[in-house]
Image (cartoon, rainbow, N blue to C red; front, side):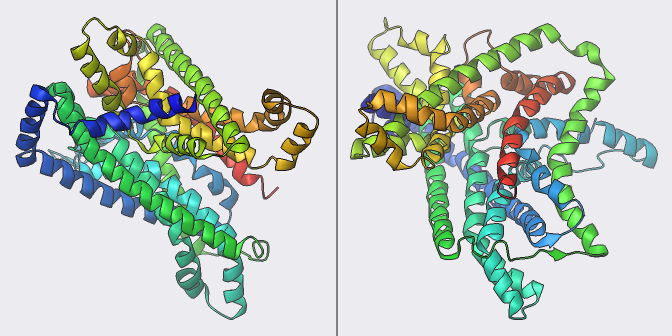
Length: 532
């Protein structure tokens, strides 16, 4: 069973790397396409992707770290509200934020139209939102919570006792922040920035809608426009190598964070006192914490509500119900299967942590780092090879004309989310419980059903919720692998926005935001639990 799971989760990555092997005429055509692309668009893909990643990295670090430092080290009115409100942009898919800002800020949008009328000017008032800078803006205020969460943990739990010691030694606040807090927060900031960049590289909705020539957009162009899956797979390999580099940096930063915890712990967490702000410093704190919430959540929601309130007649409620049911069905099936696989792997890891089990768990855990575009290419490429060898085979039909291929892609990408949550639940169950059950004659199935399951209900519920929401928001894999006449909210929102029907795209986009609020609420409750 573990071998089958390992092969199923490894197939997309293996197929993508296998695209570099000679495959007859198709391989020659792909090599010719790559040679042509290397002299034309490939350098643009690389340069644009690197520039976008640099801009996003700088943006999420500045916004996330400044917000985390403000709510952790200072006391001011509204701090408790900002602690959870700064998580709200996690509920906003980046492509939804892009649609909202485009509708309001574009040349024909209400803001520029109003300013041209009032000021009596002609032409563009603001720079074009559909640009590399606009994409960096969207990603920064959609993904900064990754840095905010990890930096807040580092500053609140790891640097607190050293900050208090520095205060007792007479160090001023500026020196405590620059020489104590920020150096200790560096591993957390690096890990959060790496996670944000992995999401940026995996994105398709923003880059495609804004016309940004990134690797993900190039993969779909090679596949859909040039009709060559091998070339698309080879481009996907380059993207996967970039993600692997970021994953290495994130893992390295996580190890440094664990070292920091072991040395510091929580011994001085209750002794450190936030500095009470007065006067202008309060206004500055409100600005640092309020601007990300306003730009990343409040304004996009208001921008999407505007066309809905202006004209309800453009909305097709019957079709919206069908899109919602498709999204709910796929999300529910994927969540149940992902939790079941996560329970199987985590239980085997607890009972028999041998090399095959550890390898399977490690491979499944890496799935979330693989972009959806790479998974799509890696799943469909073997199907094309099989169809060429055995034209009568029905594998292609099963994977592309039904939901099986789509659910497979979801499990490869999101089973890691469920596994992490279930493993965190197992970490809180003492091993002595297993020993006691064994002494009473309980077998493996009875141990899982009667001992582990009652203690894992909350962890598995959280895992199912996280997978469900991720599946609802997933765009690249859904857009390519979905069966005919089974559009989801994410796909419809993208298609309507691409056709400049932004008023109609607002309804499915807002539905995705409402669904995305569920894990944000769960996360905010979890973060507040230790203080209670």
